[in-house]
Length: 53
Image 1 (tube, rainbow, N blue to C red):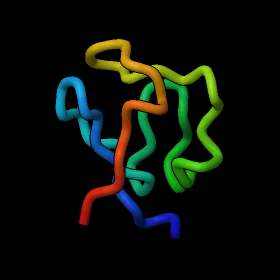
Image 2: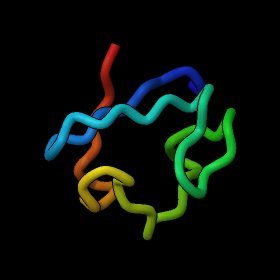
Image 3: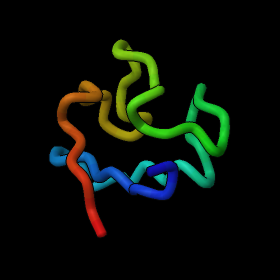
């Protein structure tokens, strides 16, 4: 499941677990990202993200 990408429904930023993100190490599944993590582009909550193919 570590290869599932997530997209911010507010700004379209894509979280790619293979690359990680601001404050998140690469190879970190989105389910393991801290609950208080925010989109680095628009500041939306983690709950604003949805799975993409």
